[in-house]
Length: 222
Image (cartoon, rainbow, N blue to C red; front, side, top):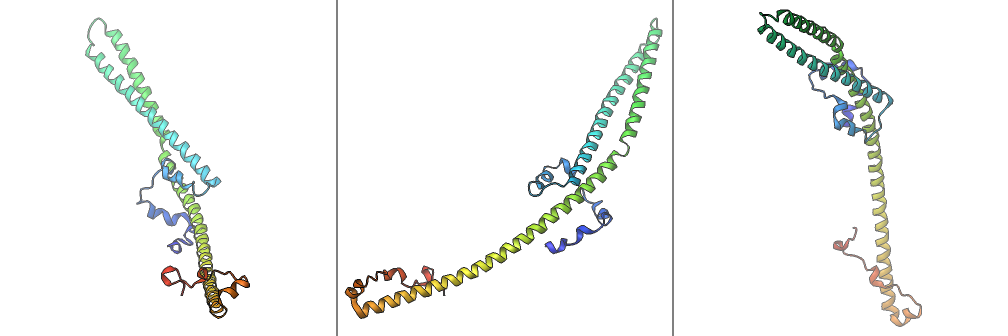
């Protein structure tokens, strides 16, 4: 599977963009799984820079959105009050009502001007967020791919070492079993020829049962 990825990270960004336009890419700095990636590999300076930029853009967008909602609520309240004032128009208090209506209309215009300014301020923030998030995704993929390659090489090295060690272990176990068999047979023949008394005189206490060849079910390697 790793071979399918090899070399792809060196391509230009434009190759990925058309395919990714159809994919729903999450805002990475808001995704807890993205942060968990860096428990396995360390962030680069470039990733930290993009992360900071993205968070600042999101903060700006949030501030604009919050202020826009508040202004719209104020504007609705002013419009409702203008209607209420208009309902009372036509009487001794017309001058007072007219002044109040004029003041409300001025405040509505102020709200409209501020909303327009906010729309202009927010203008290209969504595009900046999308582009910054995209660049952060590419840098993240490059970093993770590098770590995956390092892991793959280390795994292959470990697998080779395990196979080599297993072969050496098997060879050593066979040699051990051959020596045990030789020891058991040698001691048995000596015992049969010379008897226990003679064996005891030479202090050959090898405990032949310890070296008795094992059966297959006991772990004998054939």
